[in-house]
Amino acid sequence: MNTEIPLPTNAESSEPRLSRILEDLLKRPNALFAAWQEGKSQGSIILLVVLGFLGLAAYGLIVGSFSGGVQWAAAPVKIAVGTLLSAVICFPSLYIFVCLSGGNAKLALVWGALAAMLCTTALLLVGFLPVAWIFSQSTTSLGFMGFLHFVIWIISLLIGFRILNYLGAALAIPSKGKLYAWAFIFLLVTLQMSTALRPILGESDKVLTHEKKFFLVHWSDVLAAPVKVK
Amino acid sequence: MKLCNTKLSKRESDGMPFRRWMKKALQGDAEVLANGVRELTWYSILRLLIVIVIGSALYGATVGMWRSPLQGVYSAIKIPLLLLLTCAGNGLLNALFASVLGANLTFRQTLAAIGISFSIAAVILASLSPLSLFLMLNVPPIADGNAVVSHSVVLLFHVGVIAFAGILANVRLQVLLQQFCPDRRTGLRVLLAWLAGNLLLGSQLAWVLRPFIGSPRLRVEFLRPDAFHGSFFEEIFKALMHVFHQH
Image (cartoon, rainbow over the protein chains, first blue to last red):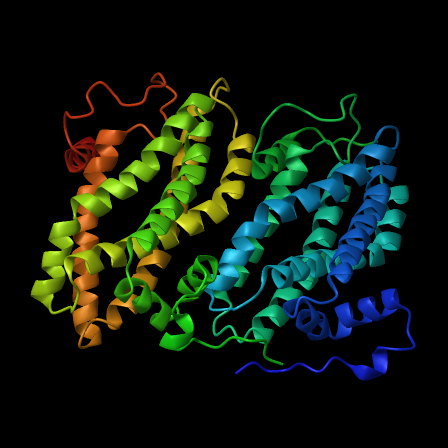
């Protein structure tokens, strides 16, 4: 027995499509899920990916403004592309984990949920832009700015993860443990990606480094190093 | 709001496309899993074999890649070989366990049940192979001064992932066994007997077929020259004696 999910009729006609999708994303993700599960509204997935990319790039611009120079261009590209790459790396396991949790989701729904999660995270990062900017222009401490961006990233991603909660509820998944495990894996991948694509925050004459390090090792090296200021 | 999430009846699950069948198997649909065993054909066996080979080969490639690309190729060959040899080698033993302990399974159905659980594990491993590849690209290489530490990190990661895939696959196997056993306790006994037998054979086959990751201190080769010398459990015993002797 399939349950028909009625799409909200009051939002269908008058509002522009973009604002309707954003409103659904933030207030009624289930409306988007229902459409994707039925194979409809696939264009909205692409729209969410594009919005997410732009939001991440905008935040990257503020990150790069701390050091300036080549980071004006490098930081937005690295943050946007790195996050999307992390999503691509983790997508197969998300689909399988949803299946293992008992959820009967189509591929389009899982893609859409991932895009929705990234877009939500990007929107939060855009919301934090003024905060990040003011500190970038005020402080000269690399360690402090790194910590601040880390905290902002964690908060934004945790709020983005609520999409997984909605997905689990929509699919009547009895236990969301595997989804939470996936969320933790995704978080780790994004943190490692930031280390793989360094330097993002500090000054450097190279766009990328070839030295391979785990992110915890990199952070402990940075913390143990003499205090660096701009 | 609930999206479609219903289990299928036997009639609905007959003739299901394999991809959909695999998805239902991952979800733990007991009827679908049981039909995979009851309605066994050579074509369905071939499809399971293909899933096991491709899924575990994808993951195997990432296992050996840290040591060298050639080790990646070797491991992509050896991990499917390990799974298939374990399944085939213990086929008779597992069928005997099933009969003796009270499961209503023939020899072919026992092989099918274990093949299904291995295919589920292979799909899980394949889904985690991009993650594994990403990690291998980020682990400090052999030439780095901390190669031994990196090797340990790589080893722990792969042990964890393979254990995770194995546990989930066996949870699905238990769901399947409940369909062929008179009660839950019988199903659990059969599962534990199969696990013990597969662990015994599988661990020694893994020892013979080593290396999979590749020690930084040894050269890259398909099999070690002393592949058939010693055993997995003897090495564990020696390591334990070494630890306790030190103390």
